[in-house]
Amino acid sequence: MNIERDTVGLHTFMQDRKTVFCYSGPMTEDLLTTIANPVRHQLSDKETEEVVANRVFGVFIEQAQNIIRYSHQKTKSTGDSVGTIAISIADDGFLIEAVNVVSESKRDVLEATLVDLSVKDAKELRKLYRQRLKDGPPDDSVGAGLGFIEMARRVKKFEFDFQAHEFGALFVYRGWVS
Amino acid sequence: MIFEQTQRTPYVELTEQSCSIRGECYPENISEWSAPVLEALEENMGISNGSFKVVIELYYFNSSSAKFLFDFFEYLEESAESGREILIQWCYRTEDDTMLEAGEDFQEDVESCTYELVAIEAEAAG
Image 1 (tube, rainbow over the protein chains, first blue to last red):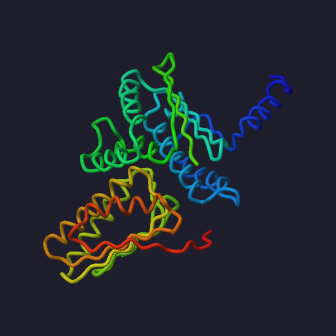
Image 2 (image 1 turned 120 degrees about the vertical axis):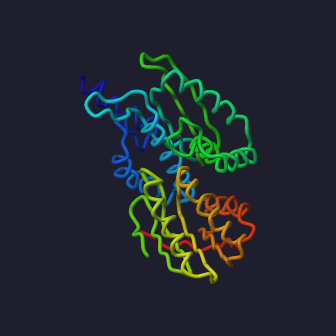
Image 3 (image 1 turned 180 degrees about the vertical axis):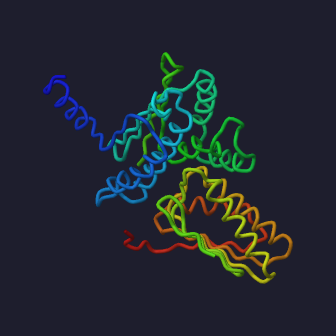
């Protein structure tokens, strides 16, 4: 490792992209409990409306729990899910980024879900959310199956991509909140 | 009966005439937390047949918790349909569009209960 290129480079990289929070590694519920509040306090200051901070927090929690439950990449020692989440200042709000490996079959379901959600407006998202609440979760869901719908309702816009990965597919999610 | 507030779950207080839920809800395992709460609700509501008041003041809840709230309101609605007098107050901070919207979402499913959306002024909370 080179101090200039790697370590100063990391600092500059984070500063330039205005990433105020980033975690990459084993994601567990214990970790979430520990970091949730510091992350949230970091978001709420005089310059950020509490309502916006809460929305960012909501997307952060949903995506963190998605990684915990569905990441296909696990640590060798504990079997914990591995992923990356970052919160950055962007436009007039925040950008939440999440990256984690998913299985090929999960990729297919996810892609279909997200394509479907990306063309829905607020009213349609609300209707879908309420329908899912009544119907109950899909079979392979750990939670209520509402996470991505919830996120779609909270963000101004979102993007996603899947890239080749040896353990399945690398799922990349980007959501903007303001 | 009281369920103490934790970092990720709300304060819940139940009497034979009332239920209060305050705080935030994003537990690790929603069923584990909510099963005893719903059980206690049924128990307390079963004591008498008088009017029952529910006050909910949540600042954040995750998508898994939405399912718990849905089941919670569904139970109240069933009781109201059987003739029980039930008042629900969904409290939200004035600028909190998200919680207001959530309150409106749940309102659509509880026709037999009296359901009020109550705006509250934000306090300087810790």
